Amino acid sequence: NENVYEKTFTEKISVASNGTGTDTPTNPTLTFNDNSNYKDVNLGGTAQITYSPSDAAISVDNNDKGIIINGNTITALKPGNYKINATSNNQTASITLNVKDISLNAHTTGITVDGNTTWSINNFTSNDNITVSWDSDDDDVATVDRNGKITGVSEGETNISVKVQSNYNNENV
Image 1 (spheres, rainbow, N blue to C red):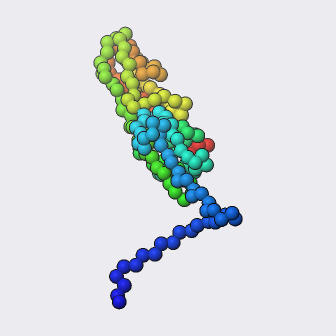
Image 2 (image 1 turned 180 degrees about the vertical axis):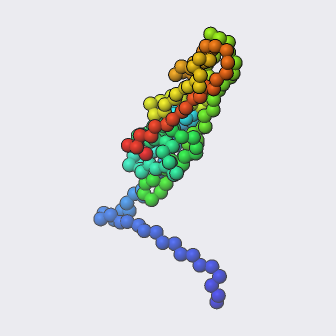
């Protein structure tokens, strides 16, 4: 007789002193607070996660300081997709956080002397980990304040720049 198919299964079972089997460890769970496994957030925004068991190890694939996890709160510091894992009992549950890239909303590119307009940053939520600085190349033509409000000073042209910088707190993930 030729053996065509064979498969062997081996599983460990623990037997307690009273003769009953021990409980099977619970597989970890991980979701955002709205019970989803995927979420979009703005740069600087936060998302809440729920996981069990409470001692599960939380990690992030390819984090590169793009997000901070502090307890159940994730803060987004860098655009990208981040796979967040909860590992317990050699099992892993995962969710994905997408941090949206920012863009400049320069809806008006011409103003009059003494006129003003305010530019803003799309897909951005202000927080203590991110600094925003605005600058005018020529304050004699136009000034810009820390909130992106541009005021015309005299006729001419100048460049307005905005710098958004994430400050990573290395005490967190």
